[in-house]
Image 1 (cartoon, one colour):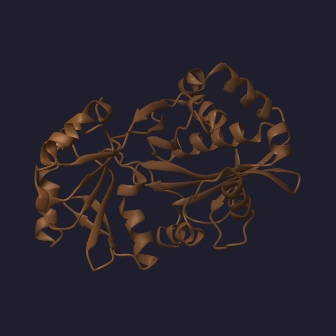
Image 2 (image 1 turned 45 degrees about the horizontal axis):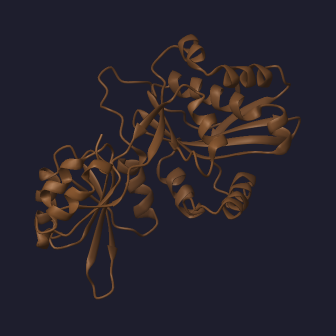
Length: 305
């Protein structure tokens, strides 16, 4: 049960709902980018990012999009004047058929953990892995106070400071703080901060971004004391229950990296989330057409189902 700060909550679920989309393909993400001075395009329902290359050539990037049939997107790119721009395509699901249009594999597919929130709480709890369930029970037995609020517009918030140190220590990069704050500002009530306190001391926090009927686990941190108290599983569990009550049907827990972060991978999959294979990254330059198709076929097996 959360202590909630003032602020709008998410709307109740509609009767007829569209399919959930990745954060990178949401109108909410587009609004945040525009607030930061970028110029994303929505072409045939697909969010396309642009960058200027040396010499004035534009680069177009499509991330986590449904490219089951790339033809409508390519037609929209021609209409928008991007038909000569190099494309970086990162499909939501394996798309080996992209080799037929001349796209060349650049990076093999990664995996993300998608947690289905449509089942009732008892079913979700039953799907937890045993060790995860034990940690949840331990967290529930502690005297922790849980809160939920809209993300404060504060670059000095302790979660940002802790996450910056964590990125530096582990050698990875996340969103700039300014983009996260822009998301919260431009999509009021859709950047939810969940925190666990022991007394007045915060011991864990999770920032979740909602977009349509889906949500994304964006930033999280647990202190040493929080780990002792199993604050993180308790906080994520209660956050998932709250999201489900608001009509959110899927929580994207982020990429799974069993080599560099095996503990985090086990934690995410311990929720009962399923492992979803993405489509990798492809390069395509329309003026070349299908010239590079034979080269693409050499790696097609690595990019398939």
